[in-house]
Length: 122
Image 1 (cartoon, rainbow, N blue to C red):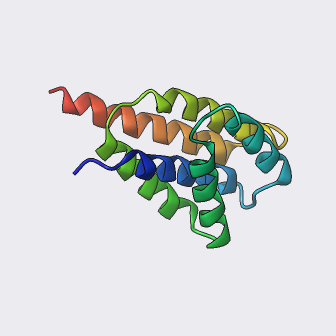
Image 2: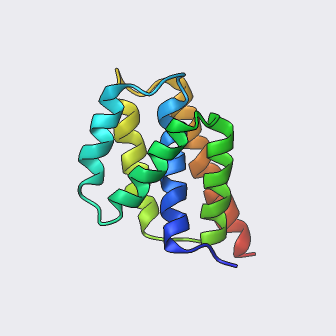
């Protein structure tokens, strides 16, 4: 069964959390940037709730990443991914630039999601 929009927004928050935490801590500058970029989207409250929930539970980067990836794969292609990729880059950049862990996680997500969708077309 395809996940709901709310489940997709939860996944986006989980992934943003995973990227922000991939360097070992979430900096205030990343939270500030997240708030400012999410303000431009109607789904901001749902994504922010998910981000805050994962942060309060100190979810591991890998667990949050895997949950987000599976939900996005099951949801299928959507226009929200373009915004998500921009948000990921902006949040990661907010704290002294994108570090190697953040860049690797973002690239991994894009590649795994792209590969999944390409294989659906076979």
